[in-house]
Length: 179
View 1 (cartoon, rainbow, N blue to C red):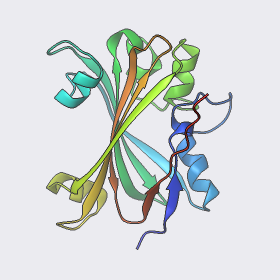
View 2: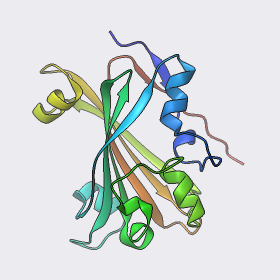
View 3: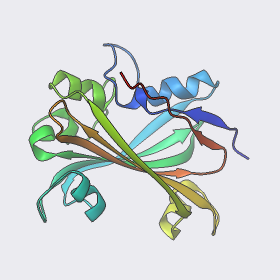
View 4: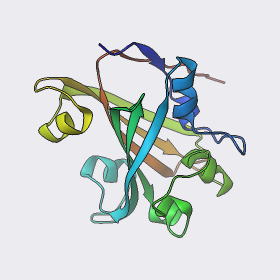
């Protein structure tokens, strides 16, 4: 059984100070674990309908996707696909197949994009056959799906992330400020 930990979202949308690592590595370290990300693919694509709609893309409009496998102590626990509109990501490090120092929110901040509103949708279902292989799950195991949409200061979508997470031992914790 996976140890339970609490995860919040604010660290994943906030630009980080220069020279700091990524938010996932810091979160895992707080519970005495090693959190890593393996970049699988960076490409231009037409996003799935759910993502395209959330990002307000025209039919068949492309975006940049960064696909990652998130690992805890070397074990895959999450698949994360981050989508960026072409006007945000083209000709930036977001479109290149390499890690981004401090993570995407740090680069987005340098480019003038700061998340001013974040919408998250969470659901659960059985893992697909591909997810079972990639996340080392058994048939019938559940996964959590989290779709996070970040809007910039003018209310325009700047990033949409589709996460497929192992459900065992996972607890999502949210804190919101209203002023």
